[in-house]
Length: 280
Image 1 (cartoon, one colour):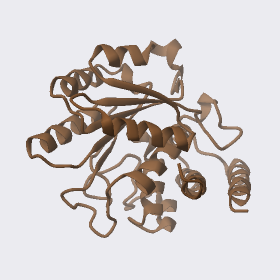
Image 2 (cartoon, rainbow, N blue to C red):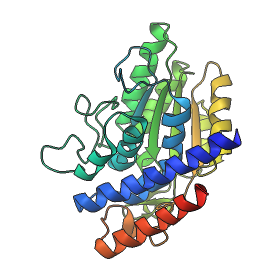
Image 3 (tube, rainbow, N blue to C red):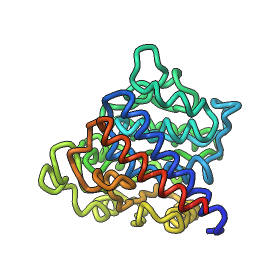
């Protein structure tokens, strides 16, 4: 990856993380842990990969993104804001009455959102439908779906995996955010989905495993996905829940909790320090 682009993505991802903390703190509720772990990949997709246009959010040939793990909406909202779909200041209205930024993404309410999500396992089915529609209509757009590793305990995920392989949806990419933690603890203790790679391979998918916080690896994975014909691709990203905020990292308590004022200040100061270092 070009060094200048990489630094810009790192800067933007840090601002996205600040937006996540800002939103969840002001809402006094939300899901910071998994939002922080997917922030780098979402930043890459919106800032460097996807064909989207804030001036025309519903253009027919746009790439689609379905946040199947819809509880991590703070990350999606922060990326959309920094991509220009709505003002960054609006992130502070997360979960407020009459705000466009509800706790889970809502189709038709927020520009740039392609599917209402929140019931785990269901977003991927919608993504499969979008991809099949594109194939039938000979469209060139790509469809990306973001899943949690706890989410793949849902049977509907594997129905969609079978469907996508059967219809050879090579315009579809799943990203499994493998941070190894869900609301009740480690995914291996709750209901182990491991080995994730072998399961998707058995369903007929092309599988790529990466470090989800390495922009070089992220770009390489999506470039590889573009070369795969007649089968869907899944990118399994090894990530750190709560990435970027010291006391949230690998701490299951921050799956669905908001920081108090002291914790908010610590988090924002840490992220600001990271931003300052990147901008030197």
